[in-house]
Amino acid sequence: MKRTKIVDIFNPELLGKEVCVKGWVRTRRGNKYVQFVALNDGSTIKNIQIVFDMNNFTDEQLKPVTTGSSICVEGILVESMGKGQTCEIQAKTLEVYGTADPEAYPLQKKGHTLEFLREKAHLRPRTNTFGAILRVRSALAYAIHKFFQEKGFFYLNTPLITASDCEGAGAMFQVTTLPLNDLPKNEDGTVDYSQDFFGKPTALTVSGQLEGELGATALGAIYTFGPTFRAENSNTPRHLSEFWMIEPEMAFYDITDNMDLAEEFVKYCIRYALDHCRDDIEFLAEHFDKGLIERLEFVLHNDFVRLTYTEGVKILEESGKKFEFPVSWGIDLQSEHERYLVEEHFKKPVILTDYPKDIKAFYMKQNEDGKTVRAMDVLFPTIGEIIGGSEREADYDKLLKRIEELDIPMKDMWWYLDTRRFGTVPHSGFGLGFERLVLFVTGMTNIRDVIPFPRTPNNAEF
Ligand code: ATP
Ligand code: MN
Image 1: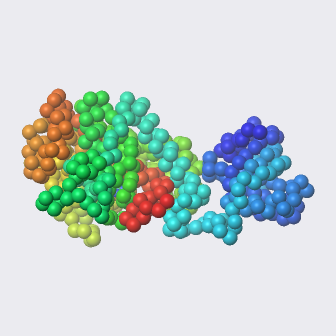
Image 2 (image 1 turned 60 degrees about the vertical axis):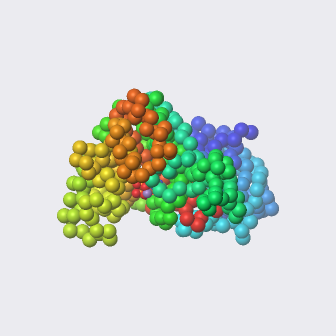
Image 3 (image 1 turned 90 degrees about the vertical axis):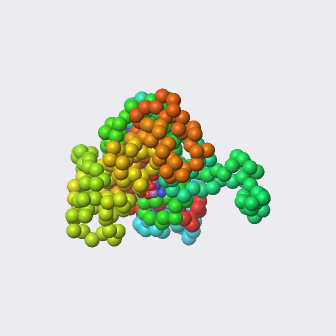
């Protein structure tokens, strides 16, 4: 008999019909006359209740049906009299696919802490919480492609292995096939990379942006969506060593167009999740973050406040608030500063623009004042920075001068500079950390809980 997914079973048209479901047992309870099994197959947060009339089954048959075991049941879908569910299945046949020893299976019924579940990341997708998070994550990934595809952006795949470390976005993971305990050396004692796989030092990418610009200045508008790697030793609830980034890059967009796109984009994703993952988000709200749905609606229904970094710093300085890191013009804002602006001062998402050039990347468009660049960061409640972007410097001479000032080796940059040599255009782009978006939408507070298998300092298990 054809299997019905549990997500599709709560359908009045199926009432009275014979159905087949397969999944993992969440709980079993009952007495010698009747046994109730809550079954979940991952397709939805909801379980289907299966009723075993013990006139038709033996204790021996039900014995292996314990939490975590996998079964197949055929039976009749009927209206349920129990509270909290609309229908249930009266079992006719039972097949046990796999047992799960109750002594050994770690996910017994009662709510485990998120910390405990991180140690069990191989099994945590089977919990309500992680099922919900992973379904929301998947829906958001789909929404991202949908948003850009419908706007006529092209999906560009940028390389994961790169030979340039000019982004400066973070420390890189080196990629090499050289034998680490017997490195080939040059006369002067340095490592002889000509013998390495690519004939030069390479590393995992920290951002696809530079190649993204090559795409944008050919296809008009592109987006990337792929993994990025940063070997920064920052053990924070908002940083991963391996995370997914979305980087749209658009020819003929100035910074205002860029801000408009960023705002429309994050709102679209949040709307999509609310419309398509209601049950999961309600579950997460109920169990972790009572204010979640209100906060999501709030972002949707407010225009993001736009102001310059200089204005932002002034507000922080005049706030009278004691920050852990003192504020003055020129500093890189910390999460506490960003959150103050968003949560306490404006009570709305904020886009800060025109940052000091010294704390931003070399490729950002230089303003007339000679001190600031046309950068934009989107700041969110609870998260702080969710998006970082800018209008790019389109002028060859200005860009070259900045590259020289920062001592970035030309051998790494010649291909990038060619975009400004041949048919340069005003253009802009930004990067959204996918996990920061998932954090925001799920109301989770630790980034390790919104990616199936987190990579952080000292942790590459699973
Ligand atoms: P932060 O100041 O939070 O470290 P950043 O300035 O290094 O961020 P960018 O280089 O602008 O960030 O990267 C673009 C986006 O990628 C950020 O806005 C953020 O959403 C995300 N991001 C950056 N670093 C990480 C990380 N280690 N883990 C997860 N997401 C990240
Ligand atoms: Mn960083």
